[in-house]
Picture: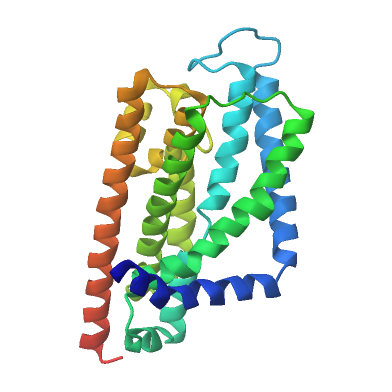
Length: 271
């Protein structure tokens, strides 16, 4: 019963976000063209690098698996692009955050509810057609039967991790008048250590070790390892999910604490 009440409380935020998306349908076309181009550059670059090589490539991937990894890495990035960071920072800059403080809802949960339709729309309207397009022109690796449900669960954790990271960046707007530079650094660092630019299995040992202790590997590398079966047995798969769940909970907690600190800062400053 409590869960139903909570769901009803935050559903209007998701509905308003969806209505806003439908008013700017051309954005989906722009995102689709941009994603198709970006994926093409990545995929054909890697295929050119490993052209003519047979069997397993470095990191244990064959060419269809590597192609699939690179393709889906970009699609997972779309799933996590909920614009939470820029929207939160924008509310702070405009002073609209004062209105949000008056609403009888949890602000981070309201932002998550508003960002969820953006993520799901990017996945269904942009990412899925791009994957189908490349599946028609390139050999891709078929996922295992166990890999599909594991990937779906892992992708859910990755959304929570991505949301928490973006929310923390947006909350930096309480400390600085412009988070553009912070967002650029965040995007670069996250993309690299998540395995979006280079699969973690292809990184040098010390660099890969650093990537595996950061939360960002749960955004891309973890879900795709589960999908493609690049783990040693059920215990290893459970370990990947457990690490993701732990980071999702930890970052959500940090984001909640950061929000409380930001609210106290607003109250102290009197605005």
